[in-house]
Amino acid sequence: GAYDQSQGNYSRAFERYSKALKIFQESSEYGKTHRKTFSIALKAAGVLTFMHQNEKAERIMEEIREEMCKARGDKDYQFLTSATHHKTHVDSMTIKTNLADVLMRQGRLDEAGQHFQEALEGRKLERGVDHPETLDGMSKLATFWTEQGKNVEAERYHRESWAASERIQGPNHPDTLDILSGLALSLSNQGKYPEALEMRQRHVAITKDISGAENSSTV
View (cartoon, rainbow, N blue to C red):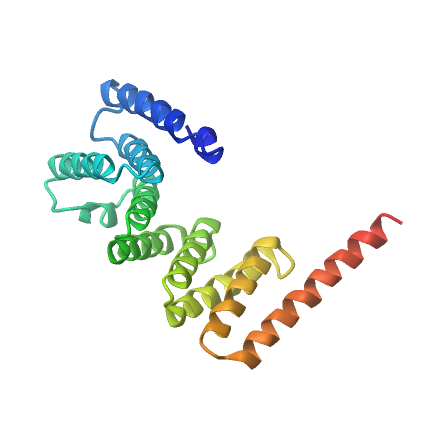
């Protein structure tokens, strides 16, 4: 399903996700209330939003919500941020991120932002600030706020993810450079042109250094 979705073959992707969902729901190992089952259902709903079948996607999401509530006796998705087992909690954060993607494509931006935020906080708690999954969550949230025009929030998370990426992956890593570029954009959008220019110049300088090192190694 993921491959078909990446190729824009949404009908085929939905068909594959639906088959996988049925297998998981009927499985004695997983069943309807397992987090992996929820995750597949959310992926199916996400594909439907790409196909502009939002009502059908909404029905799937409502079914997921009801099953979650039955499974835990909680309201809405609150249990996703209260799990104590490490692996279970990380799986929960993945579901929250998938849900945020679906909500964002439906234009439900406030809800999407809340779920992105909760997924990030959960990863910080369980994985730590410097874990790659936490870094990915920070980057997703920064990009989300940039796309919504909330550049103050975007700057905050771009700075946080940039500092973490430099520590984890180094200043020359492609992910670090992408985050640096995003930070420059959020600064520019706020009229902070001198600092935005500084970030862009830093980006250019690092890129040149990388190119120079690669060229010299091939001589």
